[in-house]
Length: 155
Image (cartoon, rainbow, N blue to C red):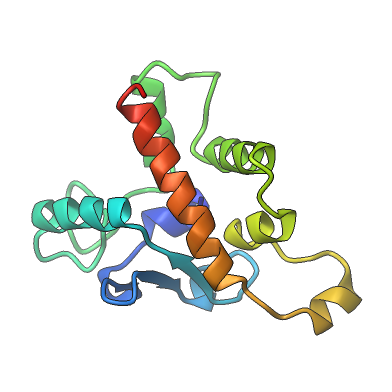
């Protein structure tokens, strides 16, 4: 549920496998705030596979020509086009898909907005309401990972 730019630039030193967290530093975030993403068992399994493939790169998704750089933020969009989703889906649109699905499942809107790293537009509320809902987002992310896995296996 991260932005394409955040995902493309993901670094191994941002991943804490023991705590099951991905901590994206403020300088890589759109709103300039640290964003912590709860990781699920499914995500950790994927990371294990990716780690085997990426070798010595500091990036989860190294560029094809040099593992010293990360993939372009448009790489996921190009992959969606090659998979036949041209004009129907974008990598950023997957965030909308997640938001819509989670809202339809009656997850708390504040939890979903926190998962998307959206900043409350109400300046007063934003100044006083400082929770990141991490524990509740862990439950949301477990549900989301299970939902994706069920969809992928046709159940």
